[in-house]
Image 1: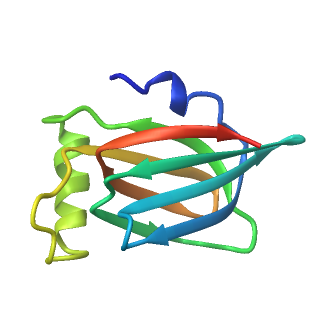
Image 2: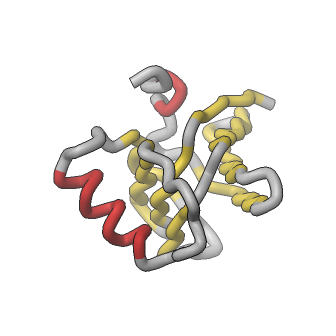
Length: 116
């Protein structure tokens, strides 16, 4: 997967912001680890699912699911229930699992990392 390294190194990061923009089809996650704040910008985002958001949200893992895998199929089935207006669903899905708080699935085309 082309962005495998982009999603590495976020274990124990705090999820401190989520920006969803349906006009630009982008979802931005803002993460803090120590003194470093990083934004992950998911472009071509078609659908997402957010559960268990709390005042404090700690990331356990961020990983892209392998297309055709059971995990990918299960995530796609969950996303199929979220938003029916998508004309062309993305094939890439990332999952964010939590040590505490928010868990997400994001369907997207590409991802960028911006360190602040």
